[in-house]
Image (cartoon, rainbow, N blue to C red; front, side, top):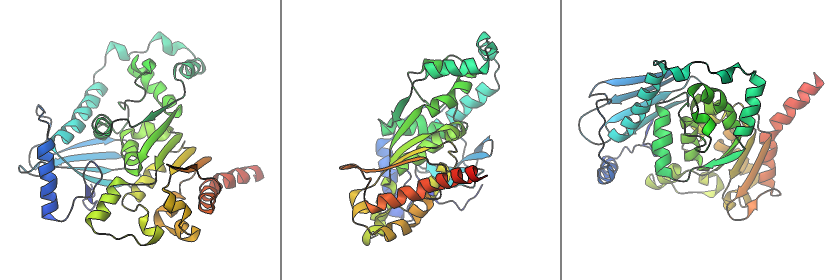
Length: 339
């Protein structure tokens, strides 16, 4: 596991090099702490637990006995992304409890997991049933605290994404493990995911695991980052023009995750008005984060909007960005036609 990955908290804010700021974070954690029983699933000081799944490695280690943020969590993905977190006890326990559930379920054969009469139907018939049982819908983050606990932290312990709570009202996903496994990808394809910002998008793409990333087709979020804003404030970064206002902190991680969404066809981004209308197109398009965003391939429908005036179709920056992102698809189609 790469030890050089910078450490961040579960809200994606960087761990400060300033001892006083780290102490403040410890104080806030002690104030908000909810005491829970973890019944021996946490590693002790100097010990670690590793979760492996198809090229994904999650290592959770206990670094000491003092302080609340005693656990380090390092995620290494096969496609090159490495993330390092520091967790408090309850966060580490949530992740490991789901990992234990996933491990126990995988090694415990029950009658419910044996082939049912349903799977004697042809695959085409089963897919048609899923089509009627799983209507097209939307999912958003309604409660960030519940999302962090039930989705993000749990998802780290389940790199497959099998337990991600997609579609609470989709009873077909709760019939059996076999049906869930087969219908789950279809449910992702039928859902438009509406997220608040880049931080939520990163946590979401971690939480849904491999199954989710391979099947998501529609994604929406704001090109802003709470963690980036806090980091700039703490480091006294003064914005100088449009470029310095653009998020920087986790752009590379987000783009790397988005590139794993091979079926992603619809992307809708929200930009603050001053970034789109007041920034010269050349400066906007030269922003490193925007250049990385433009490297995502396969997007067929790309919309830009701001939270106050709605869609931005006619401004020059919006047109350039749309052409850059969707142009790769047009080039691929033209190449296929010529061949």
